[in-house]
Image 1: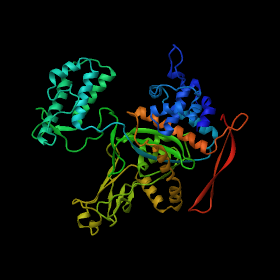
Image 2: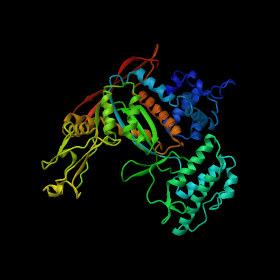
Image 3: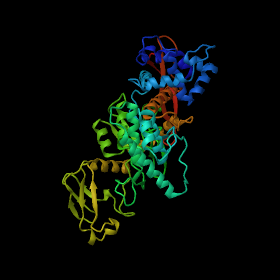
Image 4: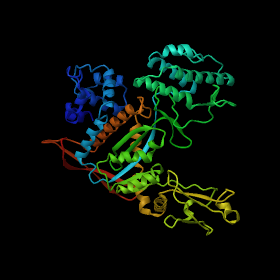
Length: 524
């Protein structure tokens, strides 16, 4: 990596690539952006902090050579890296480093003819502490006092539940449930009074964000107290967790994330698509951890849209990607799906599943395991679902294996039922499908491990934008490392790239691999 950047840094990151990030006519930036781009690429690869990165640039000859610094150069202040990343994140093309490396990948031909893509996601911990309701409301009121003109005087006049100039937590007996309830009641009342007392006028972006955040955190975790309709100003902590709950006023985009039913983390979801034979990342993204718009099946469509090959791909993914709508969209695009179907649930243990009913969506009828046939209702609702109700269940001898409902078994048939049922049958009975899934799905787990290595399971930045820029930079660095490991060279002449990875299998259970060389025309 160091030798490659030392030799090809100017070609990979030309000065014109960053021209729009520095539009000032007062002169060039103090440090050329191509040097900073090489530095943040190596930083993302090794998982260093800004201070550690600058220390390497001052003391390690490999880093100096890779970034184009002289032997006696003392690098630069670490704040310049943050300044560069901020400009990059706010630019018109925040992923330009990843895009530049993807062009190298394309020119080497390493993905030519490789039509498989594996999808996965992982949860990355946020860079802030999760806050309780009391801390969030106090912090949100203080933020309004800082960001909204004149709000500090209004806070002093109308907010009496706490001294908001005191940096500490309220001084109460925290093991006293009544004292905690009184504090929550007072803080929520202060928030409502503050929002009502502020004059209605046009606010700037920061002030508007502060007011919106206060309104959100003051309402997401509380509900009217017992015997109150919400109009008398009595509140309590709500029982349960609000959907899409903000967990910190420092990073309002972080969320509670459930990767499984039993394991919860606070942070973001990293989504990735790879070519499983080489391990090249074809697309990555950071998304919020909650919400249907950030689900794996939805984000997968965006990831595959970024692929150079837009049709005839073999898509491998676990049950998170097997939704009916996503499957239908991918089939329309001409892809071949190897998505593990989600297991069917049963109303009673070891009872009948949906696939044990004969469902004819064309004729609109369903036949139960005991031979009773009932018509489906017309599609209804925003999800266009159809239902069927069996009223013969109370006298049916198979009732104990079918339902616990007194009125009878009720089935919900979703719009893509036929395709989902066919996918379940194929996954259960087709040996070729099973062999392909077992062979090409697991490599994505290795790509996830590369992504979170060197302490990168915990994010360093706040917000989706900054973290999305970081993950693209890290994926770009890992792709460069992979190309170098797969014999990316520039031997002589106009420049060529040598790479051809060929599989040789001594048996189906223990495949072996080796690298052979093949020349491709390239700028590198």
